[in-house]
Image (cartoon, rainbow, N blue to C red; front, side):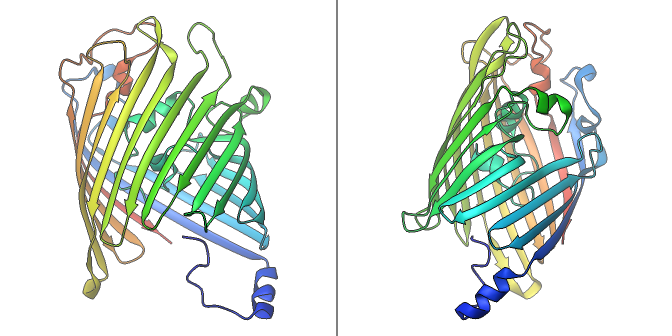
Length: 350
């Protein structure tokens, strides 16, 4: 939804005066999680603290936006739960018109419908297997770059976004700024009513190590139905590994499907969202026994506007997948194997 779409109409003179006023917005979000982990089939040496049964602070974010006038937007977002990488979004945007905006700074690549959803909007606790692989290969997520984007509402809600990026997977370190070999990403989508259909491509030209980390690419297609009573999405991915898999440079493929119902209970200001997600990842299309299938039944309970209680179970089906295979070719596939969990998460935002 466009910002301000629900605001009452104003006379032109009053609207111009309102738009001319500088505005500052501040937002915050906290998500606390507890999950039970079944890690008996995995090598304990590759498990992090988040792979074990425990409470932890998943997200603690603050965001500030400054709009000196209607055309300029400055945004800064920080993550307090990960002090080693505190800066997430840090960009400036200039709007010539709705059909043309220019953004520069540390921002998300325009790739993947689920990847582009905000942390409050994603229906599962994490974006999933394919998203993790894309971020590991530095083809999605945040990066330093320059983006052109826009929307043509009369053309079935056509949106486009295309940009050049460092190819480092983001971060505001000197290393990221000094390696100026660019990557690129672009996305195109149309939204006839509640249905959105999109496609995207992402590419990195940087070669940190020509033996282990060659340049990589990925393509994606998606369709999302977002109505008052139902949310449904399918996405498909195909990409090239930027690392050797068992001594070969190879491709990976993935797909996901999400379906949730929205049951509203106005009397208690609550919305229930029961649903499920299924995700398939083939980590190497030329290798056998590398497929991962993750099934995630879930329910989200919206307690008014500011709180969400999230319950989720993750059931991993990996027939003939040997998670304990030794490292070969520079990749530990154990790191890509998710854990079977039951998760409880409470989030709050203001």
